[in-house]
Each structure stands twice: as C-alpha cells, then as structure tokens.
Amino acid sequence: MQVKRAVVPVAGLGTRFLPATKAIPKEMLTIVDRPTIQYIVEEVVASGIKDVILVTASGKAAIENHFDYSFELETFLAQKGKLDLLRIVRHISNLINVVSVRQKEPLGLGHAVMVTEQVIGSEPFAVVLGDDLVDSQIPCVHQMVEVFDEYQESVVAVQEIPESETHRYGIVEGDEVAPGIFKVTRLIEKPPAGTTSSNLAIIGRYVLRPEIYDCLHRTLPGVGGEIQLTDALDILRKERALYAYRFDGKRYDAGDKFGFLQATVNLALEHPELGGPFKEYLKELVAKL
Image 1: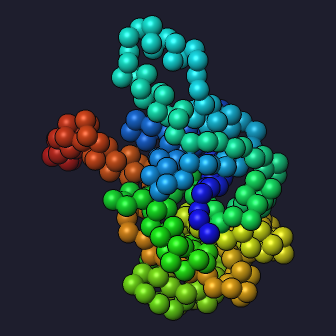
Image 2: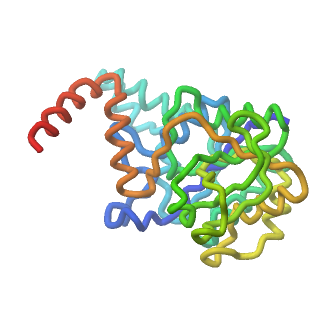
C-alpha cells in the first residue's frame, strides 16, 4: 500500500489570532514570505504526494484560491514583464491537485478526517495539520511514509515534551521497537498530570490506514464534546498494530502566537536572501537591550 494522498484540515476559526483572523483564514497568515498553509503543502509535495484534500468551512475560499490558477494576475505579470514573480505564481498553482471537502460542523479533528472517507476510499493517507510547522532536512511526512512503508501500519508523529505539559496534548505510551519507533500500547487525549508516565506527545502528522474510518464511526465524543482522532486511534491499536515515530526536526506551534513568532524568526534566519541582514538586525537589537 502506497501513500498517495494527504488530508489537510483547515476548517478551524483561528480564534487565538483574532482580530487578524476575523476575515482572513489563519492558514493564510504569512510567515516571512508565504502563508502558513504553503509551508504545509510544500512539505507534502516534497514527500512525493501531489493529491491534497482540504477539509474546509465557510470563509476559507482564500486557501483554495491561493493554489488555483489566476488568469488576471498571471496576465498582468506577463504584460509588465515581471517574469520572476510570474514563475513564483505559476509554481504555486501547479504544486498540488486540490479536492475540497466541507466540514459543516466543528466537531473535532476526528470528524474532520471522517468527512474525507468518500474521497480517500480504501487507500492509506497522510493527515497534516496546518498549525504544526516542522523544519527538517528530510520532510517530516516523508520520514513517516518511510516508517509506514516498512511496517505497513498506521503511524503518528511524536515529540518529547515536559511532563508538566502533557495535559495539552494527546499522549502515546508504548515500547520502543527500533530507534525512535514505538509500538503503541495506549493513547490518552490531554491526560491530567500524574495519570501517565509517558512524555511522548502527538503532533500534527499522521499516516493512516483506511481502517481508521471504521474506528472513527465507533468513536464517541470525547474531550470538549468533539470526536477526537486520538480516541479513534486508541480503538485502532487494539485491533491492529499502531506505531509512533519520534521525528527528526524542529516543530513550531504556528497556531499559538508565541510559536508563530518563533517560526517567523527562525525561518527568516534561514531565508537565502533575508537571513544575513536579519541576523545582523537581531544582533543590533539585542545589543540595545
């Protein structure tokens, strides 16, 4: 079974970034020189996946438009001889094949995945959350697909976090079967302090077998009254193997204001044109503090 498609849920309201997200999807907020969603899509494409299913809601048309062909803009850039910008715009519109599926009610991540069932069918697929940016030499999704190819079972991405923060994440318990790879024995969504000995937190990358859909249909509303993907995965691991992978790379929580700023600064420092001048600016700034 090969992973050929990726599901990217983008239906959230982005309330943590109000008022900026009152009229603009949070996924279109810019980090350095491109919207957050483009970083996600570029990671997917660099992992060998071209078919992307966007799980959308009302007010998210700007995301679809960003990856669509724009006749007026391309004609204008061509007429003005702005060929470098024209190449950038055409590159974006050719990045992926897009299918949009509406999540009509905000019933949780599990529900967002469930509404893609008719599109995905009986194939394995990746799920990539737009709030989590991963900066790595080898794209995080690519790393996970390699684990899936080896074990042919569902894989969730995890990172180690302080024990004091386990109540903020879905937590994985399991046995390490290879360096950085764990066979999952239990998943808990946002466990209270002291209820788990694990500090392996699930972050926004999954590669899932199609059996997850049956598990989602059997999942009752959990934390927050929503259908939690973590709860469905806990059903899945009781019926077949499930693995967690401690990925290589730096993860930024772009759904949080501080994490968004961290991503902006670090990715700006890595930018081929802006990195040098920005680093000098930061040095001058720190010297004045």
